[in-house]
Structure formats: structure tokens, C-alpha cells
Length: 399
Image 1 (cartoon, rainbow, N blue to C red):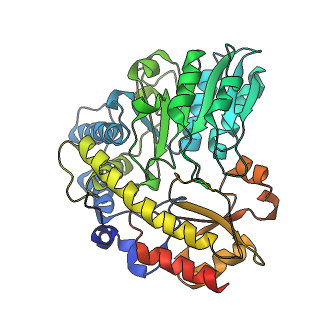
Image 2: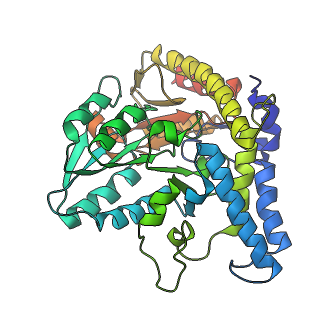
Image 3: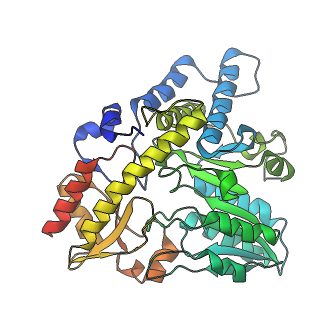
């Protein structure tokens, strides 16, 4: 393994400001290769797809290459990949589509651990159809989402289970494969939010058992758009809301309106960048992604454990997760200071972090901190190094 964030940091123009960008759980900075890919697409000239002229063919090529890249990132097939504006938009689209197959008396299962974008769309769709909503609860002491509880939650009436592959605030990594097995044994579909998991460890949607897997490229050094990977046959069978005049071909039928072709070029460049994170990675792009993300996970795990151990040893700090295996994310409060005040102190010292519920609406309510401003979130991205973590710890130690 040969991952060193200091090797790739010079590739990020935004890092020249000298700040410690520990806000990546909300969105990352992009390398020059992504900026170039987007600007090159505009410079060469793009057109809508379906035309006979060169710019249209170029856009079709960009679109297909993005599907291939996303599939390589998560272990899917390009024929089963489509893109939309955000994970929230995708979940609304899929939830409305699937709800058309539900009836009163059916059930769905959502979790307290999830980002609200993988909770509220399902709840709203279920209520409109008279479908029962069942909740998977978190362990408030550890931050875990025990998989065994799904044996009681899932039954023959369950149509869908939605769950995150990693919490965006606690870093919890649920046992997705076990949850998938339970869901599928009852004939239910599994929808997995992979927005926070994809940047931090190798993803294989088949090993997960996910029927749908969604991820956002701006969390892994790409532009602001999101993709979904699923079995191509499943996408072919389903009928999304669409214009009568638009294509019926899958997966394009899921993409409403004209795609952001230049951003799709940037997404492909972002996957290529991820695949090159480990300088020793060889083989196909998929193989290089797996090698690189394994190395990234090992590095981030070391630094995250150091960060969390140091924070836990500070008497004033309360950490909201005690799991040994989690993404490199710290969610904490400091006695005597509001989360906003802590974030402002860090900002003065040149450290970017987030404060608030970060759309982990159910988690923060369950922990009893949502109405008090929730907590401070610091997380590692591909380009964060040891010095970034040290700067965070120095500020918190002095408060």
C-alpha cells in the first residue's frame, strides 16, 4: 500500500489557502484534473444527446464514460447507473416510483441513523399510500445500528428497507449484508444510502446485497451531482415518473431533463483520481479503486483513531460514538461552548468544520442534542493529513 495525502495535496487548488479542510463530510474540494475535465468539456463543445452531429455524440460519450466510472467505483454495471442532481432528489424519485406498487397494509422500514434524505421521502410516500412505517433504532451508548433488530422489524408485509451504509455524523457502519439478507428473505427491496460510505472504504454493492445504492460525487472529490447503481434488469422493469415524450430506454429514462454533461466529465475524472490515490495501484480501474480505497481506509483509520482518542481524553469533550470500526468522523460537544462557538473558534484558527444536525435529524433527536444546536463534526477526506488533525486538536485543547 502506498497512500500519502501529502502526495496528492498539491493537486487541489483550494488547499493553497492554508486551511485545514475537515468539512469533507458535507462536501470535498476537487483536484485540478476534475476542474480541467469540466472546463475541457465546455471548451470542446457539448450538445444534447440523440443528435447526428459531433457535439451530440461527444455528450453521449461523456455520459457513458460517467456510467462506467461510477460502476467501477461501487462495483456495479454501467447499464444500471443513472444520475440526478442529488441523493435527496434520487430518493424522492425512487420512493414515489416504488410507492405506486404499495398498498394500504404494506410496511417499510427506515432507520434513526440515516440522513434525512433517506428517511423523509420514504415516510412521506408511505403516508400517502397508507403504508405502515417501522423504525430501526440506534444504540444510544455506542451509536450502533444493531442488525438483529431487523428480524423483528421485517415481515411478509415489508416492501422496502432503507438504511445508510455509514452515518454522516456518527460514522457508524451498519452490517448491510445481514440487513440485506433479512430484507430479501421477506421479499423486500433494500435501498442503501452510500453517500458517506463511498469516500472512506472500498464499496461492493453486490457484497452488500443492495438493490439500490446511491452516492454523491461531491463527497469524493467530484462535482455536485449524485448517481444510483442497481441491477440493470431491475431498472428496466420499473417505471419512473417521466415525460411521455422522453425515452423509455433504461437507465436514461430515470434522468429527467438534459444531463449536466460537463459535470459528468468531472465525475469520471474524480473516479480516476480516487483510483490513483495509491501510487502502487495497478490493473483495471476497478482494481485500482479497490487497492486505493483500501489504502485510504487504512490511513484514515489510523488518523481518525488518534483524533478520537485525543478528543476523548479531553475532560470538556463529549463524543457521540464509541464504536471501534467507523468512518473517520468525530461528532462532539465542548462543555461551556455551543457547537457554533466551537466552530467559530476553529474557523479563527483556520480549521473548517461543521456544526449542527447536518441533516441527521433523527439521530440528533434520539441523542437529545438537536434542540441545543446538536454538535460539531470533523471528518477526514482524501487530502487531509496529520497536520490537519493536529490543528483541530490544538484548538479544542485550549478551549
